Length: 319
Image 1 (cartoon, rainbow, N blue to C red):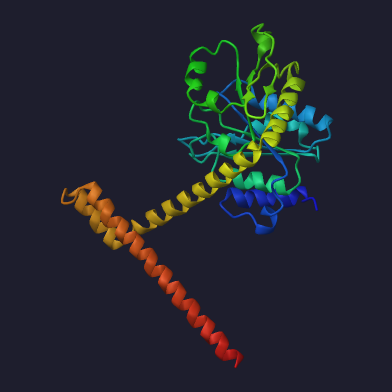
Image 2: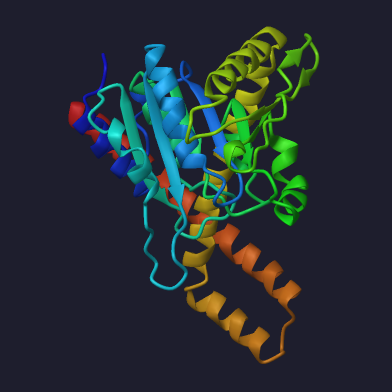
């Protein structure tokens, strides 16, 4: 059953605030194709996505878009302006667009991105597009979310392309040179080619302004998806994505536990000893690790004891 737009909006808001995706919805995922769009700022990623939505809707495909915007280091706010470039699709029931703030998370996506991708997948969207912030070469986490990664550049970027090579270029399944019309960069595109074992990355020249190359780009995305399915690499990528997502959630939970433990009196004493040079940081970590792990064991033991007591009470009540 397709989720209503207002229900999906409320769910995405809860997920963005750190809430979990309901298990019954997670069991309905795995059907959508996940497309990652990344690249340096100013190359026209949002305008390109706007054109992609047009093309995909003509194919009668439904599209969900997650657009990541940077959080201001000064005000803590985010412009969330990517939706403005796609505003004309807002009345289309087959399109859902949501902007998210990074909240200072590095890597081009947010902590909640994977959960929101699952929500759009469970809601029945055929294609889910994740547009990253556009901050540079370290923006590689999108490869842990998407089935197909499209890296967007533009002609005459110069040093920007050199800086991107060490990160973005390595994760690109499809390379797009956008704004080709502005620089007369109409070099022929290299089409997608693949065997059962190897994908040869295509380079496609596009113009989000005129629509040039958009159909070719959609075709390359289809071919890449077919390659992933036929080679068995789609299952491999999604298995890596699950591992990366669970790892991020574990890291987030452990970080919260550590910060909470550091507020305890024993931890404060250890930190004070480091500040007074009575203890070096490495020894402090050893002590804090024992303190935190010991605290967790005590909490787990207490929880288990409480559970046993409640079970005994229920049994006595039944008698």
